[in-house]
Length: 79
Image (cartoon, rainbow, N blue to C red; front, side):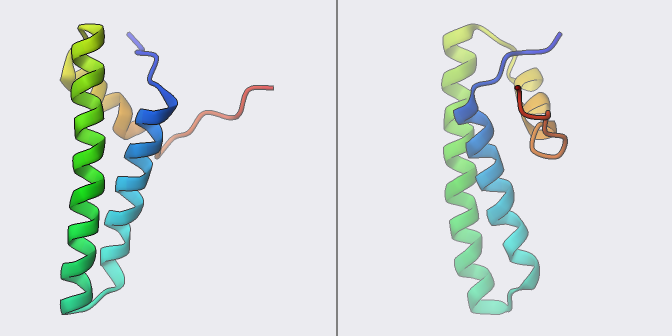
């Protein structure tokens, strides 16, 4: 069953994914600083997921699974 995810949830997950990808090209101190930025972005996404599942009585696993797939497989814009 597909869950109607909010644009905010999708945006936060994409931001966390983007911050995580930046780690690949950094060295030592830069990498540690970027890791903190990534963790903060991921924490915001997780907090939003927690609120979303509580407000809508959804299964967290199902929401997280679907949310992680959306940024990798975005739907075409609606016309």
